[in-house]
Amino acid sequence: MPSPQVDQLDSPAKSATAVSGRTPAVIRLLVLATFVVILNETIMINAIPRLMGALHITEQTAQWLSTAFMLTMAAVIPITGWFLQRVSTRSAYTTAMGLFLLGTALAAVAPSFEVLLGARIIQASGTAVMMPLLMTTLMQVVPEAERGRVMGNVTLAISVAPAMGPAVSGVILQFGSWRLLFAVVFPIAAVITWRGLKQLKNVGEPEFSTIDWLSVVTAAAGFGGLVYGLSRFEGGDVRVAAAIVAAGLVAIAVFVVRQLSLQKRGVPLLDLRTLRYRTYTVALILMAMAFMAMLGSMVLLPLYLQNIREINALETGLLVMPGGLAMGLLGPTVGRLFDRFGGRVLVIPGAIAITLALAGFTQVTMTMPFWQILGLHALLMVGLAATFTPVFTLGLGAVPSPLYSHASSILGTLQQVAAAIGTALVITVMSARADALRSAGVTEVLASLDGMRLAFIIGAVLSVAVIITALLLPARADNVGEFKGAGH
Image 1 (cartoon, rainbow, N blue to C red):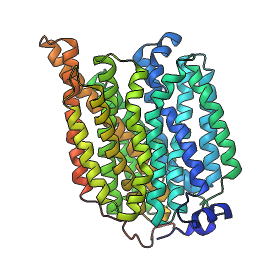
Image 2 (cartoon, rainbow, N blue to C red; image 1 turned 180 degrees about the vertical axis):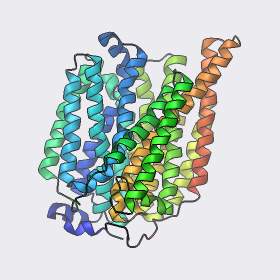
Image 3 (cartoon, one colour; image 1 turned 90 degrees about the horizontal axis):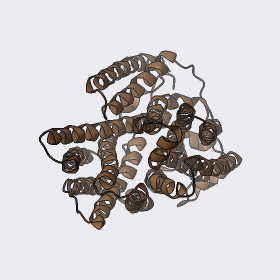
Image 4 (spheres, helix red, strand yellow; image 1 turned 30 degrees about the horizontal axis):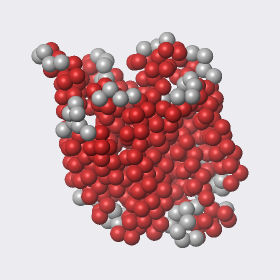
């Protein structure tokens, strides 16, 4: 069912929507901005050795620059559903890019680790608004018949950016200090922000509603605490990590009960009525499982290549880049196929490809040819490309237009939580197996290699759940009909 907001578009966006086969200008702008902010999420990975020397910090401390980014995303995204309904498209874009630019500028001149960490948190706050803004606007301005194609272009930005991050940073670091990473990104982001504000039109009408601060606090404490607790499993005290995870889950339970109460008055911070739509819920479960499997492998592969095969960070980035590029470049093709044939013909083969790739990684050895690793990684990325575009499109298309911003926010929050669970799971399994073998007298390298194999087996098992869930998805989005909810 087309959204009523489409009629309220200003003329440039209206004409872009009307022309079949063209992506609306508003979406092109938001995709470009999203590409830059997501690229920044993984750009720090290669800089850790430089940071350790320049700021006199340990590797564990340096890792916080990535962990804090993910933590902030998990804490802020639940609030964006309410925020995007309350402000105009231009205001949301200005807030997102303004925060990102402020964080980037601060990071470039940061005199200490503490200031740099604060700058990364500010950057992440902007990124957390950008992703749901892009998804929500897409669902409002793109006709249902063309959503697959446009979502394919969005997938290109969202998937290529993290894959490019380590390789781009590896090249930049050849020319100077870690500060260059931010100095290069800032002017690019500034130009995109300026162009966006010149061309961006408001989509839909903002609705005034008050914010429930208990919901804000319990969301931040719950989702942020859960992601933090999961990140502590890596090299930390397992009991402390488990206690933090438990506290996070309690806060999430309080948050859920509070939302159910607020829904009766039509003013929830995050509207959980989206979960009543079966296709959306199935898409959420599938996406979470796929993200866990993907993030687990994305963490394990660089560890294998750098610690076991002893190649440097730039070479590692270049080795995994073809898979990331294949995933992104296939996005538009997958989108067009989805518009023509529906989701099942793509998602089921895609899920099988993910399982085959992860099963292949369980056979890694000290001498596995690099072309084989590149091939398996490319197969994994192609499988994910065939899966993510249809799943996002089917899931968001299954909810009524008043719930788009909430559905996008729940999707984004679950991505961060699934990423944290996937990472914690593989690192914990790998470390436990390696420690057990080392204590039995096995050499350091062989113990680590066997630990990685077991962790890849966990990823392969998770991916089987993706195949099972894929069988439950319909070919097309359900007809959602009218949304009858309090306050609407």
